[in-house]
Length: 340
Ligand SMILES: Cc1ncc(COP(=O)(O)O)c(C=O)c1O
Image (cartoon, rainbow, N blue to C red; front, side):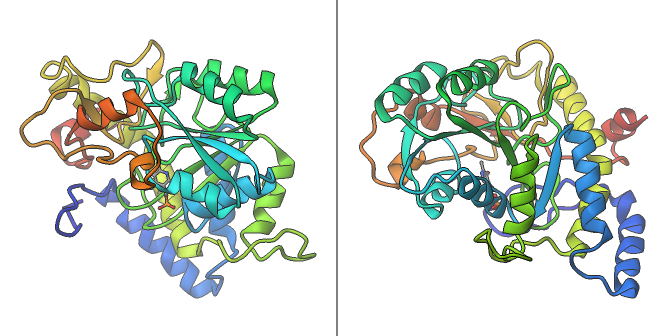
């Protein structure tokens, strides 16, 4: 789709124009069936996402709704939650909104995600109730297995921020399935978008049930302290189209990366065997012409005026850039090949 975003926003929405007809048919159906919310498209989007992600799914009006639902379920109020500083402010803000205290963890230089060594140290220092692991850039955190094991051993809840990680996998396993829950975002910059929206994923039926009540004012017994975080049926219909196209978009991006970018950028994030990145970003550790900038310019601890010492986070913030890698559609040369 042609660039539609405003000044200073350099991205192209991941959408296949060939899907417009299907989308309009869904929207026509919604208009005539008079179910504009809490209807069959929300159910269908969740079913499709569950199948894709291999765990239960609850749709929200944003990542934030799903994140706060999970944090409320695990009762973090008054307790410490560890969070990487190399992330979007949404991650620590979700903890504050749920009444928790944030302490920051450093990242690795290799994958830009939470460092196992620093996590171990911060667990000893702060005795957290939960940890946010953010899969930065569209790949899965390289130490996800060890981090999940450490959290299990220490009785700590592990939450995966999957806002960047649509379509990623590691030996077939999807983001959000290592931890107690994962949360995706469908904001416009993401690999696939529904305009706004989020999806909470979990293998815990008790959390999924809580999340369904949380997004809907706690209906019907009002024991769950929620508000309105519902996804509209129009948004969910777009989600149904987008999840059906996700594998194509991710294979297009992977083919584009290996054909056109990997040969030019040796100094890039290098993935371990068996990992497929969703390529939300193509990250290199050298300043390049035509970069779309950084994933994040300012680490959260600096924005929040904290005095933490997080050397890798500081180094990553000054020393990474993103190469443009946006889905150009099945009509493009790479698209035709990737979709064959
Ligand atoms: C890492 C990360 N977490 C959370 C969010 C928040 O998502 P949303 O805007 O859907 O609430 C984003 C979105 O930009 C993000 O990049």
